[in-house]
Image (cartoon, rainbow, N blue to C red; front, side):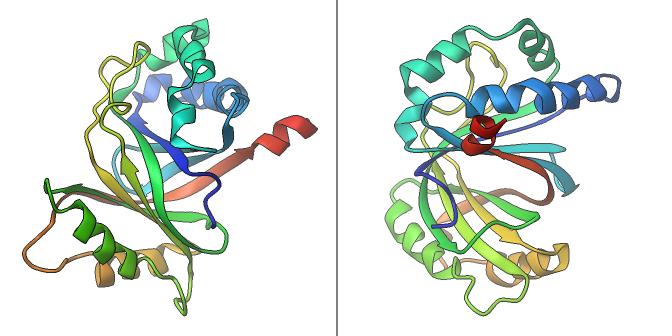
Length: 223
């Protein structure tokens, strides 16, 4: 499985230009390592929009979904650093999804990420998951490394004490790891523009991001 673990935290946000340098410094020098150091976290990836909104996207992989409701994680949420409080108060257009990784096919991760946000219609989840799984096969596709489906947990997603304005819902996200923007964009257009009628999900948004950097638990142990 190319994605580590079975759980994922996805966050995305914008930041005003006057605060952007400090925002990036905080993520690079404190926040990613702080989160990956929590028991059950495995890695984090940090992205910048190529053609997407919000501008910044973050993926945190965990051993299981339950890690994102664990005492260790809750304790960290309840005790943010002063730098965290200041930075998080500046987030705009914030989204936060705590999700299960339900499909992950391929080998490895790419420098380009395509993301499609979908909202399944109530009662259609099982049949829609089967339909999506058929589309999430990277075999024989040039420039496509791996493809994934993550499904939000409505209870755990959305606002926290740190982020009272964060939006959350029972949305699903298709993630496409590739080596080039053109390859990812072509696949998104070819496979994910339409679904079997009648529609079993409402499209919410889609975009393409570039990987800025990633951090694994083993990186912290070796530092």
